[in-house]
Image (cartoon, rainbow, N blue to C red; front, side):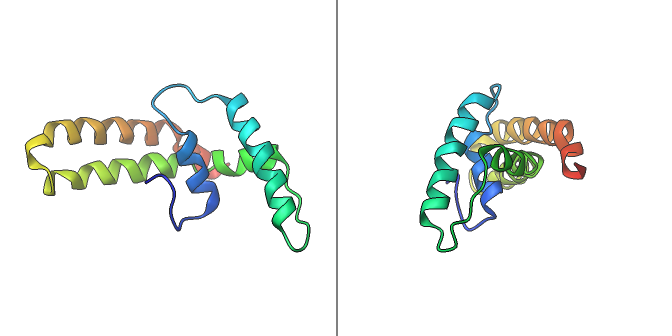
Length: 106
């Protein structure tokens, strides 16, 4: 459920976005392996650095929180018995969006 037909930086950020503090070290480790595979599989030998991939994905963090907020706002339509739970989660994700939205202008 975390990946889909979205822009890769958006989907990659969703993998690492968590309610707990993110681990930059883990993210860089993953992006180093990802960059090697992109280079290996690319017909033109495209080379990207792990740091570039990290910066690209971090720029999408606010949108991943916004998407989660909207998702939880729609859940009462499908599971009304847990409306308070969905409301609490939506409010939490909205707060996280508001805390990170300045990253959209970076």
